[in-house]
Every structure is written in C-alpha cells, then in structure tokens.
Amino acid sequence: MLHSLFSHRSLIRFLLTFLLFSSLPSLCIGFRSFPTTGETTDDFFGFTESPEYRNAADCSSDTVHVAMTLDSEYLRGSIAAVHSVLRHTSCPVNIFFHLIAAEFDPASPRVLTRLVRNVFPSLIFKVYIFREDSVINLISSSIRVALENPLNYARSYLGDVIDPNVNRIIYIDTDVVLIDDIKKLWNISLQNNRVIGAPEYCHANFTNYFTDNFWSDPVMSRTFGSRNRSPCYFNTGVMVMDLGKWRKGNYRSKIEKWMERQRKNRIYELGSLPPFLLVFAGNIEPIDHRWNQHGLGGDNVKGSCRSLHSGPVSLLHWSGKGKPWVRYDEKRPCPLDHLWKQYDLYRRNDDDHQSQPLDLSIGSNLLWYSNYLI
Image (tube, rainbow, N blue to C red; front, side, top):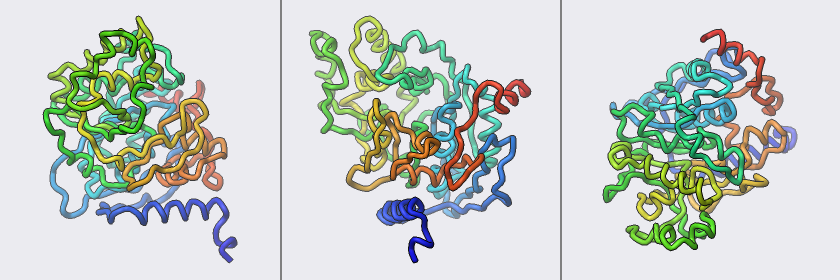
C-alpha cells in the first residue's frame, strides 16, 4: 500500500524532511501567496516565480542586510538560498539582499538582475558589480579550481563594494539553505569589539590549514601568539560582519597582505579561507554550530555524500566539491540533497524533479538577452 503512494525516492525525501523539521523549534513564518501559474517563461530562463512572502503582523521596521554572490555557475544555488531565507523568516519584507556579481560573468550583471526580479517580484535587493581585476593578481592556485574564482574572494571586499551606510551584514555562501529565521542570526551581538562572528570548530587540527613553510618560519609561526583565545578553524561561508569596524580597521588590506605573502612563499592550499584565519582566528565571536552545518558537499576532491553533524540545525551548507544541483542534474543526489531541492526554483524540462542543467553557454537565450539589454 505504501509503495503505491510513494516512490522509493519520494519516500526518502518525505522521511528526511519530516525528521529534520520535526526536530526544529516552532518557527514564526510570514504569510505567503502562490503565483497563479507554475509555468516558466523565457524571461525566467527555466526558473519559476517564487511565492510572495509577506510580513507577519508583529514585524518591526528593522532591516536585515544579507550579502551573497551571484553568478551563472552557482545561480541555482543563489536562487535556492534566497528562497530559503524568505520562506523561513517571519519578516521577509525586512530582508535586504546585497548581491555581488562579477564584472565579466558569462551572464551580465544586468541579466542576472532581471532574472532575480522576475523570480522574486517583491524582493528588496541591489546588485553590485565586483571588479575581478582588483583581486585577480593576488590569487594563487588552490587545491580545487573553483576556489580560484575571483568572486570567491568578494567576501574580503564587502566593506568597499557595499553601500557605506550599511554597517552590519550577514554574509552567506550560495550553497546554503536556511531552515530557521535569519533574524535570530542577525540579532547575535558581537562582543568585545569583535569584527566578525561565525561558528568555530576547535576540534579541527588547526595546523593542517597551513603548510610547513608557514610553521617553520620563526616570524609567521608566532602570528597567533597574541590572540585573545587559542585560534580555531571557522568556515567563512556564514559570517555576521560589522562593516563599520571592518572599514575602520582596514581589514581588507590585512587580508591582502597575507595573499601577497602566499604568492611569494606558499603558506596555505585553500583559496580565500586561510587569509581570514590568519587575520581573525582567535578573535571572532563564536556562534552556535547550528548556523553552519557545513561540509555537506564532501571534501575538495571527491565530493562524497555526508550526513549531518549531531545537534540542532538552522542552516545547511554544501561546502566542498559536491553541489546538490549538480548531483541532481547527474541523477545521483545524496540523501540530504533532497532537503535542498525543496527550495530549488529551476523547473525547465523538469521530469520527476530531475531538472536539466542550466544553459548559460555561448548562444543561449540568456546571453542573447544580455546583448539585447546592453
């Protein structure tokens, strides 16, 4: 009887969703209404329009600022992340998204802006253009090619790119979904003049994030000696940032100096993360681990399936090589990828929820539309 109601795949999705959401505290969800049709149009480039999310009655006028990148390669992830934020907050109209797009992305920032506006008609957002030449000469080779993308370093330039009147922001990667109200993360205080807050993972072997060149140098090896606490690893995919203090302390320049040192004498292997550790480890505001259940994309080589860490969950993060939309396109999703799929709004040629890869290649309608707009 049960088999006639659910396919094996549907049953797995149902059980995973039930178990995860039944373990969460009750959420105050804003009102939402659905589009009159679920059809996609050429203007959506395969995406369907999101439901309209409205504020609950007790919302204040406070704005929550959220920053994330926006590019053609990770577009499905960005759309799903935005959708998850809106779906689980009680005050979606109070969320302001600051979207950072690369200047020379195959899909122009203007096209990406139009797409976001069509998918989320009521969304309050602004798209900023990130000049890749501001960082490209500082980037060194990494353990994974994707980590060498200049846009991956945009988090270091938020204080310069984002409007100067914005003094506090939540930065999230494009491969996350929230299953809790982002206002809770926004309300976390940064104590003792700290500039950023993030979950710390002090059980990780901190020495592994730097090479022997670093630890054998008598000067560099003392980098963490004057910190307030012992340095711990933290993931930069979810951060609460005081941009006012960031700008005043010129932290962009401090990160760039370590990138320059890396170019001369290889001291780490992992993209944009180690410079943040070098500048901030031991001096960040520790945030509950529930706000970054990271590593769901596996390691940086194989991208194997992984399970959740123990404890409550507010944010799922597919850091690592494996991305849920890619694994869905290849028809080999991991069990937890079914949770991400609930927020995926890409529907072109959707067949039993197995969508076709998003076409942003030369000659696609998206690039044609870009040229048309310009």
